[in-house]
Image 1: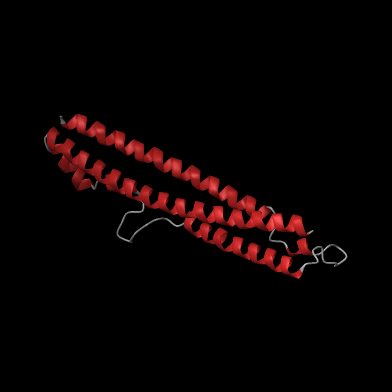
Image 2 (image 1 turned 90 degrees about the vertical axis):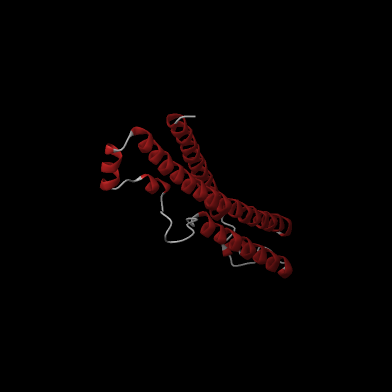
Length: 172
């Protein structure tokens, strides 16, 4: 396999990682929408338990406490999921924030590439693209892991909200 074929393979892998990053971005948007929907349900409102005349809608004190515990229990994982959704997945300060930073060349490197023979120049480009692809892949893996945890937290929050709503319907 020649340098040009190796470079094309690296380009395809880079594009695959870019496409996967876009998929993760769309998944994050979906989870954010689910969080907004959970908040807009209105189950976190206190006035669900009291009508406009300040009379309790639910007369069972144990049921009221159970529903309040479910509400608080649902808000905790939903809040934590927001943190996991929007954490960068950055492992340390020395790692570039964007994988494409591995592709940047200094003026000296560009001058050196111009005067070097084509094969050496192509190998240099392949190595840069390979490092950038590995950086993007590593970031995608961390973000994917964060999104999986956020999905579990959102699911548990929704489960508790569902239990809360069922109890509200049954005891109303």
